[in-house]
Image (spheres, rainbow, N blue to C red):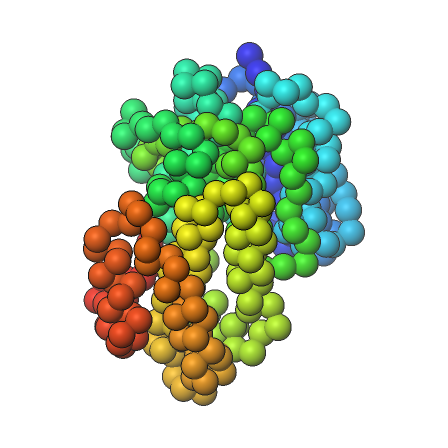
Length: 330
C-alpha cells in the first residue's frame, strides 16, 4: 500500500487544529503520514502539534519561522521529496478544514483504479463540525491534463486533490503572493498528465462566520497585491505559449475574464467608499475587453458562457444583476 503524505500548514488556528488532525487520524486508509508545518504560529498551535506527534508515530512536525501559506506548504513538499517514493501520494489540507473519513481511501483508489496521477473530489462548504452523508461513486470521470485544463470541472484550489508525490518533484508554491494556488495548480495538473474527478464531497471547506466574500472584496481596495491573480495568469499564458498550446492560452484569458466579472460584481455590491479604485476608474473593464477579444473565439466554449461574456462586455451591469440573483461564487 502506497503512503499518502498529508501536508497541513499551521498558523493561528488553535481553535480548529485538533478537529483537522483528528479527521486525518480517522481515515480508513491505513498508510498515512501527517506533516504538520508550524509556520511560526504565535498561539498554542506549536504545542498542539508536538503533543500529537508524541502520541502518534505517523505525525511529523516541522517548526519554522513565519513565511506564509506558500512557504509552509513548500516546507512540507521539501520533506516529502526526501522520504517519499515516486508511487506515494501527497495531499494538502488547510488547518481549519477537515476530511471525510473516506477521503484518503477513495482518492487514492480512484488514482490507482484509473491509472491517474491526480484525483479531485467535490467539497462541502460552510461552518459545520460534521459531514453529511456523501454519494459514493458519483459521476466519476477521467481526463488528460490538457482536457481537464480546458474544461470547467477542475478547481484552482490545491486542496481537495490527491497527487502522486512525483508530480511535485520540480514544483513549489510561489511565496509572498495571494491567490497562491493560481500560480501552482495548473502546473501540477499538467505534470500529472492524467486525472480523475469525482463529485463525492470528501473535503470540508470551513468558513468562519458570514459575509466572507464581502470582507474579501473590501480588502482589495488599493491593495498592492490585488493583481497577483493577473501575474499568475500571465505566467500561465507564457507556460502554455512555450508548449505551443494556443487553446490553453485562450482558456487562461477566459479565466481572466471570469475573475474580472467576479471582482467587478463584488466591488459594485459594496458602498462606493469601499470599492477598489480600479473598479471605479475603468481599469477592470479595460482588462476585461483586452482579453475578451481573443478568448471568445475559443472552440468548445459553451454557448451560455459566450452569451454571459458578451452581455458583460456590452453592459457590465447585467453581470452585477445576475450575480445578485444567481450568486456569483459557489
